[in-house]
Length: 488
Image 1 (cartoon, rainbow, N blue to C red):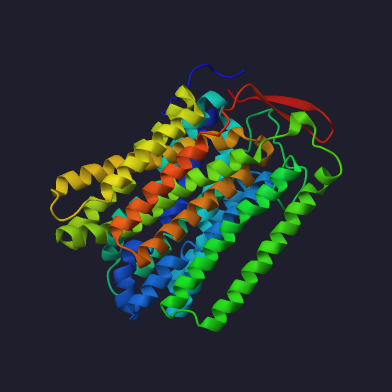
Image 2 (tube, one colour; image 1 turned 45 degrees about the vertical axis):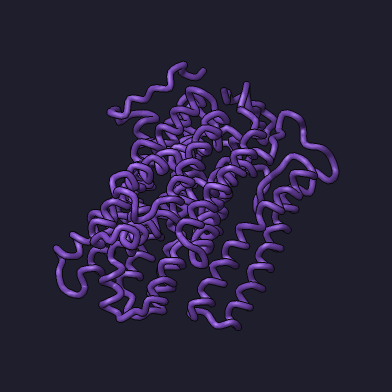
């Protein structure tokens, strides 16, 4: 039975709270490493003599591998469990981190940064782990704390790494700072493996019936799933186009990448068919069905929430700098408030979902997000800086509360597929970032903010069709044993 209370004693370090702390810190470290280059980029540029185009390419390539990685990691965590998969990801990420610290050419930086995009998939693992340990009345708040405190890793990297590089000193200070994060990641992979466990004592870890593709419940959902996979590859095509436009990739290489992306999409379609071919022969039993529209709507919601956050965090310091003629340091400090809000806003979104309903929470946060971005679209040099910061912080609250509301819902769609669903939803966040940044590359910041607001309103309409989780979810073990999981 579930507790009737959604309160959590975060000062405890036993049971499910212990797992929460172990897991959010693992996620926190992955974000420190994923973004450990950003605050050191000026030093890296000067040390290796990089051009503006090469710096831009390194920043963009950082998110490329994360899209397919979140899908693959989602499959892995559903089959092998979060404890093992997270430990392996942390250890592998440390190796790529060391390689980046040792890079001495643009090509090596680009390759190792591309590989480090894989560590950004760590987020998916914890979603399944927290979903296993917390009942539905607490899962929204728990996932919000996990996501919000873990996401703070990017802000922590920005605050700590420049000072750490300065402390090490010399032209290799940035290398030692980056390598330090790799050492911490490697050590924590051992800590996590030795201390975490996949489920509470006596609980069952449900695994998908098939491997290779997301299971769906009907023929219509099968085609819907194939359609929703297309933007994942389309975003990588957009990224390839941008790299070609700044002369990092030749047109020939770009053409090869486009062909490979088409081939990979068709390969993914084949795997989805292999996982679901039985539905063309006989219907899925009613008790084992779920509606894929739930996943599709959550995809769109994360597209505009986390996607816009990644995009805005990337451009906001320069926006403040150019709009108000501030110093780079002050512009960076004011812009950092957007990421700082994660500490409270994402858990608030999850808590609100637990308390007042999943769909209602998403509707409210998306409405606030749309208003916030419309307000940001009219910020100009006539505004008081303080007012611009207040509007920006208010908008960021709804953005990150919306992220918390999305992942308060993900674990309640279908337990045994939580990793794959979280992977797809999480990947859509990266798709959103690439899409919005592509818009920014050919338009003004005002148009950029307006486009996000319009996308939010469209998503708001879609969320109106989201089904509120109610009653119970049924999972069937391979031996035919039926287990019931409460979702409301």
